[in-house]
Length: 352
Figure 1 (spheres, rainbow, N blue to C red):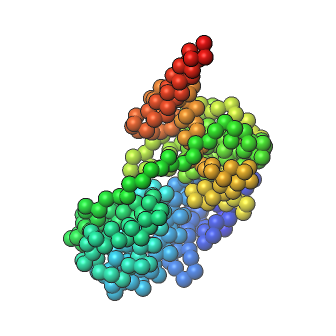
Figure 2 (figure 1 turned 180 degrees about the vertical axis):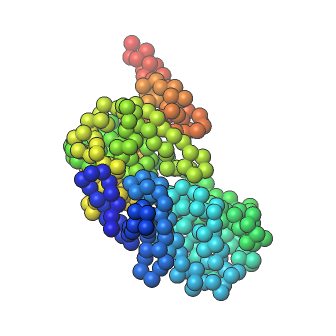
Figure 3 (figure 1 turned 180 degrees about the horizontal axis):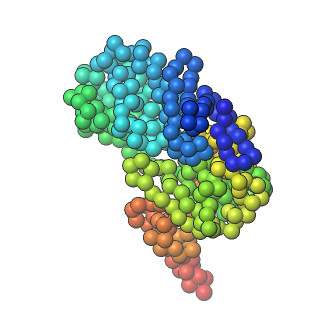
């Protein structure tokens, strides 16, 4: 069976099925081979539907691991499994769930059989330092362990918290590369209007969305000349709703790609919605095709923030576009723009 998207498209989702009850109501399910089917209550084609679908797939994948480790109730692996099934973990947005699970599963592959009760801060430092060559990944291990043990202490799963007192590694990083105007033009030259690659960049650029946001956007988010959507990041804990004018360049890109009737604008080559990771990887491919190996989806968001600051937008105006909740990060862009203008003015005086 498939997921209906508009009048002309039907996307087939793996393990997805439908049936009709005695009242002629269509019921949607996910059913993996050998597993009990899981009911999906959200309306097909909506972000909520995709979240329930992905959660059902993930829950089925956890089951074999739970059975294999059920006897080791004092182990680190068992604690991870309990955390994945918790309300606290399920309340996290999808991208946070993904990186936490990747980090914890990697740790558990090496240390999963060890008893939690004997873990100490020095053990966590060793786990951190095993990734010392990639400090960002090392710090993600600390963050993931900290989140899990914080939940475990509150839930009464364990009385120890070996992450207390363990600091993250200090390192210098400028984060994701901010796209330049020249790089945006090079991308446009390689991916002209009408291509999905071009539409992807325009969705990111003119909504200041993240890689989790762009693949969720569709016709239902474009109404009365405005783009309205809820950002994926922290949507279950601290939701941010964006309501901005549709930029003329974005409207042109959507029209040229002939996707204005779709519930989801961007689809894979198999006609399925992108996951956040899948879209990020595909976007990197499009960047490499344009000879832009440093560029990424998040770098577009930074470029939009920079462009707004250089156009003299106030921090609060930028926040209304980007969805930032504090002035601190936004002011980095406005301070940099102010320094640039001040330096230009100073150089003009020097030349004179």
